[in-house]
Length: 159
Image (cartoon, rainbow, N blue to C red; front, side, top):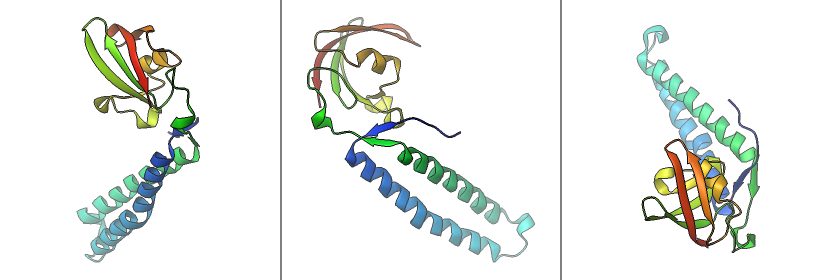
């Protein structure tokens, strides 16, 4: 399934993704090719589990490369320094207080491809991300999420 739409990332993240792609296309492709050649040298391929595993690994690698190439073809670079300081935008670090649980949390708003809830990186397309975008310090947002309704007050915005 090919994704479409712009992916907003920083120059640093672009370099990181390009380096990953280079490694996949050079080192990992060569490693798998070596495994296929080794397995092929063992003779009958119809009952060769090593060969089947290596070919399956090759398929997964090529899918990963294709997905990364697709993502890179949709990149739009953003510079956090050019974004406004007084409102929430992509790459903002937003300090909020959960008004129900009285817990302070800091989220970083990122593109959907970079989202990692465990690291408090939330997508700008998630319910929380959508609710926070464009808001300012002191604003309260109500979020309808799968776990129910949440209410956050924005305490701070930084880059």
